[in-house]
Image (cartoon, rainbow, N blue to C red; front, side, top):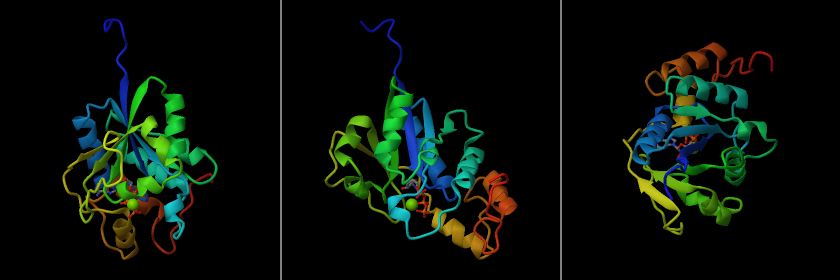
Length: 209
Ligand code: ATP
Ligand code: MG
């Protein structure tokens, strides 16, 4: 019987390093939320990541706070600390297991850009990922959206407005003294300046840390 049954919540999960969060992330999350009729998208800043060990990633607390600042005005966006509060490396399987435990009555939709999609098969416990979430691969300028090898039923592909923005480019711009206005939300521009992030002499520690 359908009546009386509670609506299962549909929750998007946007994992990333967010160093810094930019409008490419926000547009992708917003488009997927609309297309898949999601109730909410949770941004999940990663702790250390296995694929990013070759560079110094900004302190997790700064990345978390920038993501909070960037999403604060959207009632359907939230930010989770599950990954930054779990000791050690961030693996998506742990992110999804933790969120599943926190949200037992929700269907999870993991959002990922075209550059990351081909890597999924190499992730820890890849076989189990599909049972925890439906995966949504979104287009990203400079990357082909190729689902080869991924299970057809577990993955959807979606075109989103092309935002040729990357965190790597934002960091280099700040370092070179170039603007990041309109690439990242205004509050994030100001946060970066306030803490001197991405500049050689930056005071990249969070108050109290
Ligand atoms: P970096 O250059 O440091 O790798 P990034 O811009 O790729 O940063 P991430 O935090 O690595 O940002 O990305 C988080 C998620 O957002 C990934 O799934 C990535 O593919 C996706 N993503 C990032 N930028 C875009 C964009 N411009 N369009 C669509 N998806 C994006
Ligand atoms: Mg990236």
